[in-house]
Length: 450
Image (cartoon, rainbow, N blue to C red; front, side):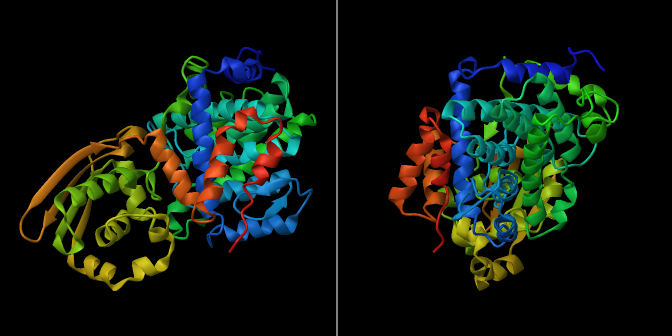
């Protein structure tokens, strides 16, 4: 058995020994923001056709009925809730991404932590401790995978599985030894094939997060009951980083600055319900349209330069929330992009969209050379008009303010509730740390249809 001072063992010790009060206040606040931003998107996404089959399956499988399916008036078991909520969490592209490639972890850690917190009747502080530390682990795993990038996989669900297992394990009260087994079991359940970009329904990409959350819950529960996995799964031969990178030594990188620097704070909350690589071009394009009072009829050509990895994403995935030519077409015609623009087919079926696509050219240009994951938020755009005018902007995605994130929550939740209900839920989530038992709070996330 490897010595207990290896990276995996030390990671588990850090998670076990780090209490709520040990987490810096600004980090705890980031976790609260992460929580309500993620849940707002889930409430809006729960009734999407892409999510309904998984939510329906979870409801049919039933179970103890102690855990809520977010955005629907349904309850099920902890494992089925994790599966359904993880899928709903990425049912739309509105969930947060990362400033340096650490994004999408919230779509796994939040559903897993919410389900397990209901299962055990956790206090608000214990819940937020588990969510924060699990999110930090997820961010670190994803950062390492993204940094080396030796193999294509969906790092959001792969790294998210490991962080969600930590969140679930902490809520169950696992000791260091049990937590190491939970991570080993979760590593065997981590998966996220990048071939999801070939599915234009967005379903398998969403299901990746559902399966990751479910695997995390199952792994933690099994570890609690004495189930074992290989030790030092981060660095061992054929372990996590060997399997996903071919670099077992990369597991040591997870520990760099652990406890001093919180990578989970490197969040880029999304203004629009579109993929991460689309956020900056869309923001810049809408700013140029408004500043110059352009309409779709004025535009002759749009040129966007993006990182090579972003280019592959926005060209191969034809879902309206990811395919950049579709995103810019909708933005040109309507002057904005909302949740309904993406998910109500009537907007794209408007004859004006077809006319714009037939007349105007949209050129997506990959920038040469391998860039960091953070480069997916950088781009250049040029808009050329029919009368010969040309405007250009180079930009890195401007981060949202706290007020903007709150307004985003109210807008998304307001698609399913009254403004008063949305505000009441927002205030409840902002005060989650003061709750003696979060189970009743999370039951408020069950939104009736109609």
